[in-house]
Amino acid sequence: MSAKARAACYRRLDAVRHRRRKWEYVRSHPPVSPAVRGARYRLPQPGENRGVTASNQPAPPLRRIAHLDMDAFYASVELLRYPQLKGLPVVIGGGRRKVDEAIRDLPEGSTLADIPVDAFPRLKDYVGRGVITTATYPARQFGIGSAMGLMKAAKLCPQALILPVDFDEYRKYSRQFKQIILDIAPVMQDRGVDEVYIDFTDVPGGQREGGRVLARLIQKTIFDATGLTCSIGVAPNKLIAKMASEFDKPNGISIVHEGDLQTRIWPLPVRKVNGIGPKADEKLQRFGLRTVGDIAAKERDWLIANFGKATGAWMHEVSWGRDDRPVETESEPVSMSRETTFERNLHAVRDRAELGAIFTHLCEKVAEDLQRKGYVGKTIGIKLRYDDFKIATRDQTIDRFTADGKAIRQTAGQCLKRVPLERPLRLIGVRVGALVRVDSPEATSPATSPTRARTTPDAAAATASLF
Ligand code: DCP
Ligand code: MG
Image (tube, rainbow, N blue to C red; front, side):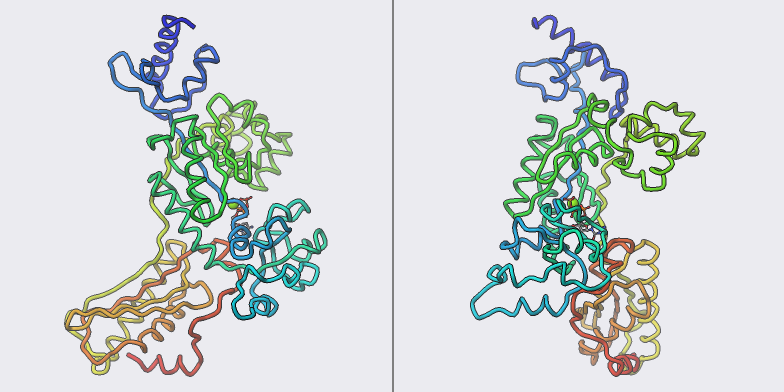
């Protein structure tokens, strides 16, 4: 193409850009040649005049949103400590059993990586009602997957190895990989233990090759630091990015552009849309709508008439790949606390009744906060400030997630027994940490980690007499 023709194309392109809102999805493409279409997704090269509007203002960069999802997350974290299980069918599920403890009983000088594969328990020997949280990719070849009953999985692949869930370990890696991402691309939205959205738009490398360059950097940095792999989809918005991260799992990168809607999104089954669950799927199937493209082919009004105003309109939008939800950076709270400074200093013995009432009230308030915001926590802590302004803190981790005022009060009471109470107090606080969402898999699973300090009935009675 001649320089003159190219300049004309760019002018046309800029005029189009100018017309649309900054992040709006463009439905109708101008008739541009494939060469120019490709150039739309490149940063301007030195000497190129594209990206500069008539008024000499640089055009806004194209919106590029990534969705990153760790591969077989819980299982991959387990394989870090048991590398001898790599390439084998392994499932993660159920609580820690005696057999899990027994294999960790190692001879002097050996490590977890030395445990022979034959020593690990197998699915065929499993008895119980638990479900699988995840399975390694070799196990998935047998048709095993998340949420499947362990007994059913045992029929499909009796030789698969089974490991108990260890949320504390997964949470540790979850924090680590998210911190790595934040250090590279600060606009990140936490979507759960193993997935995040990242806004690539203004990050160096975020536009190169449609985001592939930055995605590769993030993938490599996470792998180098943790040994874990992830899959990333980069697209014009969260909706498509979420679908794209699944395109090339595991350890894949998928780049989707606006113009790929028909070829890559429309053929997908409707369930691939984040937000279309089993019920909506069933109804769509009844109308003969199986793919995203089938929905797109329906009139907006038809969708509204059959699915209601909000859902119908939403289905129309998503089937056309439109989604302008921002990447919300507000991170999940790690703890919630309540504290109070007294009007006059109080003494643990002389003002026991008053202090006791305040303490109980604080526990109830934290519990209310947790319940209102939909979290449960496992680490209960207290904070005291003495009359000399010195601070003491203690905490204790219990074996079940809770948002219950009484449970918090009881454990906080245990913590109180471990701080000096001779001096008058200026302030007292209660904190609940190690939070997870109340509806997360961790919160609803049976207790797995051992209690660090159990509350016996006697201890509870003793606590009651404190304050
Ligand atoms: N999980 C769970 N119960 C489920 C689904 C998932 O406990 N029903 C847990 C285990 C997974 C983690 O959440 O490791 C992340 O869920 P994903 O759906 O991302 O599944 P994986 O990361 O295991 O596999 P993939 O490679 O498909 O992402
Ligand atoms: Mg995952």
